[in-house]
Image (tube, rainbow, N blue to C red; front, side):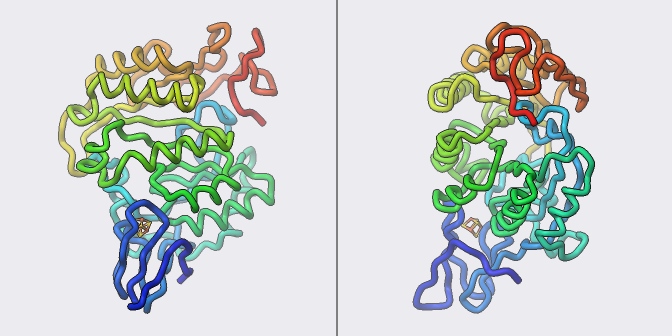
Length: 336
Ligand code: SF4
């Protein structure tokens, strides 16, 4: 098994994991809250290292990233475990499991993942996704270093619940992030997601400060985080701290795992879309039939539709090869 990074030892065989803000104290033979970091004899091991449970080529729009190489494919990799425990998790079969509980292809070395990515025609890189990649940080990191050496892009799809030091190293090898901002309420994070809000805000600011591509997903869950005042506060913070060009994907909730409140009503999605569009230039809705303007990209400079989307089919004819609006030159996307 691969030894973990970011942990401290004490006088006994107990260890403290320093990878995410939970700071799990793990006794010999035990696992952290994420189920994939294991204390064996006073050393911490990354149990998911080398054991993907899912690997597939996906449209980049599926991550979702709408302003990063639109229309291209990316090899997507996930393992098991998560450091949060959202009651509505739509990937709970992998996120709330240990890696040994899920059948997979067996050991896949980081270089093998990269070799596969390089062999896929038109593939831009590797996305660390499906479950929370922070909990398999070492595997992600080792793949990402080799991927960059081969000219591939690294895309991290994460809840942003990570400590400062591992994040700082990740920022050196990542190219783009989609961060799932679950709520702007610390109580929601504590009671529904099993975490806290402040570290996620810090991660968002660090990614923005580093100048990496950043998009945000926010799932609106009926009765749990659909308070308009809080949503306004969140979008205002995004615009003020991260900038009006911050891309926001508002996603519709459907009952899943331990959460059986009804699906987000479509009028709520439309209202939230309109609220967000008052603060941010690029807002999209997901998991629902297209609403007016809900999945196309309009240039923030001249308002023309520059990218049209239908499902995962993308027509970026309004954007030039540098990623700028063909009519007014406004920067729209990161493009190859
Ligand atoms: S990464 Fe896992 S073991 Fe480490 S602190 Fe977070 S939940 Fe605990």
